[in-house]
Amino acid sequence: MTQIDGDEVERVKVLIVGGGVVGLSASLFLAQHGVPSLLVERHAGTSIHPRARGVSGRTMELLRGLGLEAAARKAGEAIAPSMGVYKGRTLSEVMASRRSNGLVIRWLRERMMRGEGSPKSPTSPCRVTQDHLEPVLLEAARARGVDARFSTELVELTQDAEGVTATLLDRGSGARRRARADYVIAADGARSPVRTSLGVGHSGRGVLTHQLNLYFRADLTELVRGREFSMCLVEDGDLRGLFASVNNTDLWVLHVPFDPDKGERAEDFGRERCEEIIRRATGIPDLAVELKGVMPWQSAVRVADGFRHGRVFLAGDAAHVMPPWGGFGANTGIQDAHNLAWKLAAVLAGRAGEGLLDTYDVERRPVARAVADIAGDMNDERGLMTGRSGLAMLWTMRRAFPYFVVGYGYASEAVILEPGAPPGPGATDLRGRPGTRAPHVWLSRQDARISTLDLFGRGFVLLAAEGGDAWCEAARKLARRTGIPLSAHRVGGDVKDPSGALGGAYGIGRDGAVLVRPDGFVAFRARTARAAPEDVLADALARILVAPALRAAGRGVSAAPWMHG
Image 1 (cartoon, rainbow, N blue to C red):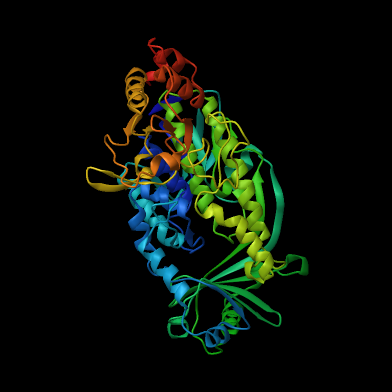
Image 2: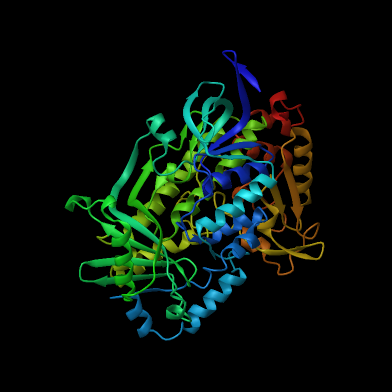
């Protein structure tokens, strides 16, 4: 506790506003780097709506790094069989026209449920609804020391050159208290009060359509058994809706568009009307329906004009809003948090300059723009994905597919770029090129099979080929001099490369090495040996961390005091 104007003020390193998947993920990534955080969420608990239903391959890599891959898959067991997108007049008619799911769908489903990897990744995407994933993240966050407070609302935020002061309201007791943070992560949703208070503008196509989520319980087990699906578009006269499975038995969501320009309002959809829409869409007039919730939302494309505003950073829907088709929203937000966490940790520890934090916007905003445009292109005129022509959808999915793994690269001061066009959104060249996610190669360590990706996540990693002893020794010396978390691994030393694939995968020779950032992106590559490798690494880290004093440390000069945190 500290005092401001005579009042007692709680002191925190990072304040996270919003306790959804993005805010909770941010708290976990910060904890991974040893940074404590205070998370506040105005609602009493985690989401009660399914909302996001899919975790991309790249996000599963991040959950794997947190040790939560298995827990996420278990939380999604009920929805895991959901595969396929269909259309017809009613759900009953579509199901009656289909035999059991084909071999390809069954193969994909089993592979996803087992979490089998691919040549590019040690893991695979996962089906899990937001209301089931958030409790997993919250439990892990609290177990790792995160102070997560629900029913707590941010009501005022001011910042100065030294930090941010927040006024927090306990919605249960009505008590107010103040907190002082070094930095704030605003993960408070599409209507972000933090973004609004900062006066941050946005660009994009804006609102495309208005939708209602009808979340309901109805036993359709026998109707869909063996024909489990992900989505099903139904069209019958003036009715149009999109079914999304939640557990493929008795929990479902029906997306229904409405048009305010025609005088339609969300308030006009009362319980009886919603239940009748559901019965008509299923094609079962006497279906027993329990309406669990009605949530209006906008299918829109909006990207904030900046993701950093002084000591406040926007993440997730607070930074970018996009239609749900393709599952980009929550996944992009979680990846935002992952990019930002290690940078905040480095600056808070005094190991990086403030300029490193500017690279969050430089790296993440182009990715958000790219995926928001793709998601927007998936909309038809009524705001539903499956109404577009088959050819148009195939083209859009072709653009979307790379992002399901890690189809983007970074070009910023935090990367030592090589000659040629810089990597950016849509980059699929995962061959050790600086600015791209480090390639996945299966290795062995102490007789255990690991992915190269399992080496990354907590600090910088120097990964060297079998002749790279000099690089490893230089990295160890530099780490001792500077206190920077920097580990070194050499093929044939502490890790083995049974397939002999690492050199080719990373584009390095027998005496080459790569320097990988804590977020798993290649920051610097030396294809072969270099003279004075310690100086080379010190110079690279100084540029990446926007920390000029590191250059002196590499030459054997004592590091500046601020570098030791």
